[in-house]
Image (cartoon, rainbow, N blue to C red; front, side, top):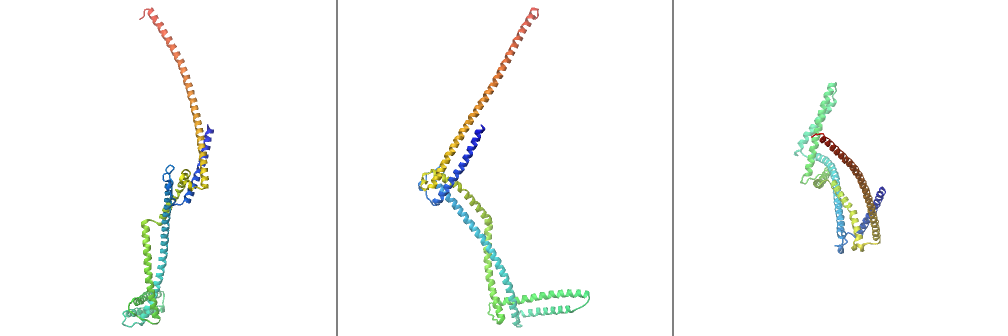
Length: 374
């Protein structure tokens, strides 16, 4: 019995391997036919010809749909990757433009200070900024003289501490006034550059004014450019926020593509099986295809033979099982008969005992009657 079951396992394993080979052959055949016939191959003559639920037209439609879905997902990925790249470019451009803007603004401030100083030097007393300049310059001179005086002072430790405190205050005031003077000059320079009236300066002041105007135009153009870049960056950021992270959307599309591609092996196999059975596809088969179909046919035959052999062995096993069951029943019947025989002997013995008891009762009853008993 165990030998027969081992034989069945061996046959089933051979069938499993042959079935795998046969499916691979069908898959290769179907894939080759799809690629050779092209995505646009019509099947007008095979509309009603099919094997099971499949027919050439339906399978081709599935094939085309899968390719179309994959191309669509790839296009989406390309678009998202382009957006991500553009976003990186925008961030880089904005960063570079902001650095350039910061550098030009610093240069513009320095030139305006230089220009303002030249303008104030040439300005007369009627200029509204002149009194401010004079007042600040006087404060600066006063603090410088005070610092010079403090530095010349000598004395003990307490005098030294007091001198340092006063010097710190004077230096703070001097720095503050210098800032104020720079601010005044810068304001004068900016006002001159921004003035729409024609002002002509000669020499170094004229060159400084011209350079300041050029820098202002450059900064203005740069500001417009930055605003456009930041606007584009903001719009892309808003779009990504509403539609989800680009990287996650790419991962989602890649999963879709993997899902579509996983359907091809089954589709190829179905088309290969169809090509071996449907006559309308015979004109598309070459010698290699026909050899594959011959191999699959031989494998089918081998598998069918093994299936029959497995059924025969299973049938023989069932017959053996039935025989074993019959033997078990016969043994059970024999046991029951032995029990019946023993029961019959016991019944016979009991019946004899009953008869003996009845005879004794008759004898005892007769004794009573003969002796006048009731």
